Image (cartoon, rainbow, N blue to C red; front, side, top):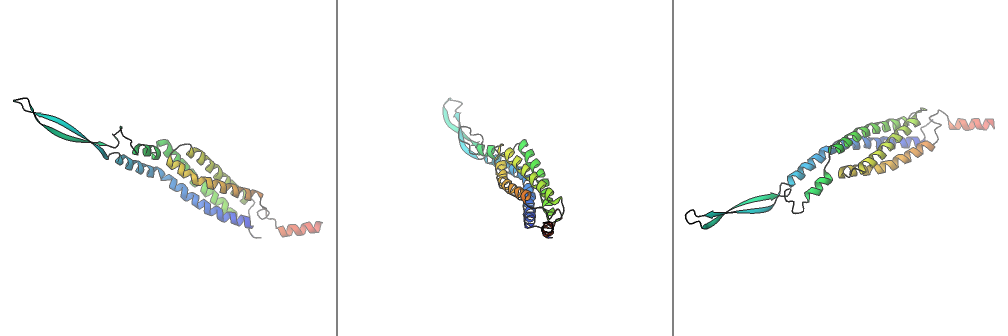
Amino acid sequence: MKVPAWGKTLAILGIIFGAFGVIGNSSRLIMPTMAKFQGAMLEEMEKIPVDTIANYEALVDDATGDTIGYDTTYTFQTLGENDAEFNPVRPMKEMFGMDDNSVKLFNLFGYLGIVVAFLFIVGSIFLFFQKPISPTLFITGVSLSLIFRIALVVIFMSQGNIYMMSSSYGSIFVILTDITFLIIAIVSDKNFYKGIDPDEELMEHLRES
């Protein structure tokens, strides 16, 4: 007996999506490093001089007490120090900044995502084999992926961090894909994996009738 079309299709797509999941979650692990680099750049931007302050000191003739001139010195006020003016870097730091809690969430979901993606791939590979447990393994892998993605979207979107929000957008598409895979795997005929030949089953039914 051949692998049913639905099983072969889901197996191939599952392996592909699982591989993308491993790559995507691995990149999630380096996101805190990127945010730290971005933060360092913004810190340097705040050191840019935006205002010059002139300081005048009168030069007095010791003999007459008259002012004979002024000694002028200049100090520079940086973007970060200039609170009187709008500082465009400050909202960018708040938007792109990543606190310790965000870093922990990125690392946690990065490692969990890699594990879930591997389980998804394993479940997909089993659909190529005529084993009663194959559909169950695939459904389990898809279910774990669905739960993981829903949790990621809910938690990351609630943080208000630009990196976390952008990281969760792709998961919305994956959620829809997982739901589709799950429905197909549940409703499709699984006689192949039970070792039942549909042609033999039909002939047996005809003989009995």
